[in-house]
Amino acid sequence: MSQAPKHRGLGRGLSALLGDDDVAATVAPQPAAAPVTQATAPPPPRPAANRTPLTLPIGQLRPGKYQPRTTFEGIDVLIDSVKQFGLLQPILVRPIRDEPEAYEIIAGERRWRAAQKAQLHDVPVVLRSLDDLEALQLGLVENLQRADLSPIDEAMGLRRLISDFNQTQEEVAKTVGKSRPHVANTLRLLDLPHHVQEMIRDEKLTAGHGRALLGFPDPAAMAEQAIREKMSVRDLERLAAGEKAKTRPVLKTKGTKPIPSGDKTADTRVLEKRIEEALGLKASLTIEGGEKTMLTLEIADYDQLDSVVEKLTRR
Image (cartoon, rainbow, N blue to C red; front, side, top):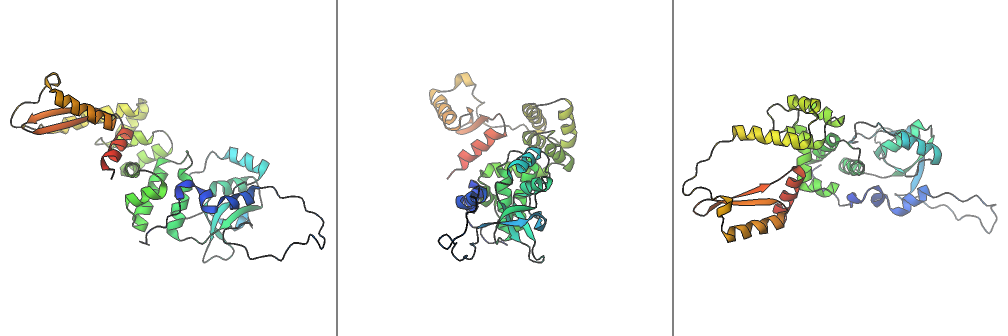
């Protein structure tokens, strides 16, 4: 299971995997049948290609064991669309080894559930032979392209790539088309108490709230207060900064005292300006003694922090 993942351009979505021709063949209306004559008789059938869409009874499909999504609410619009137009995009499936004539859904479980509600008997599918790593990667990528995937479900899917398949955060980031800081910050949500994770999954709190709550000794109690008082992410970040200031040790430095901003040299101000232009943040250089200098950056939120880390670690 520790093999390197195959690069499939996963960030481009399901159509990149299946091929535009495969999707078009599934959604294009079929022409009316013409009378068969000797001149128009079809050629002998050829074996189907591995990526050719086909139709299967809906009862032969099974939910995927690597499906990152845990909730499927809000598909009423999709159900109405399926009732009116049918299923326009095929469902990606793979054979189930120990269950003949049954297939596991890799991508498209929402469409399958909507098709069930719409009482369809058959659905278009694309059959592929995929290993477990590919199944998890494709299921995660397809769901990440939908705005309604819970940050907690995303984090759990990312963690499975790391824990079950020995992938690094860098490899996971490339797989899902996200930055490594995004992957790291999303995974941090799983350090929250389960009760707080459910608040995020239920959209009572955002992922930004969740990351800010990690700065408190009791995230669960602070989460309840944040909901009760309708705190913004910025409110929580300010409170968290205050908590850190209470416990931060006072560092005594030898040599000269820090230089007030009004007494900074022209060279120091030039350096500050260059840093601000490079990072897009307010920067301050403080001479603490001799050649020892402290750089302070004003970072408003975790999105800015992600951006700074990405710029500083870029190779």
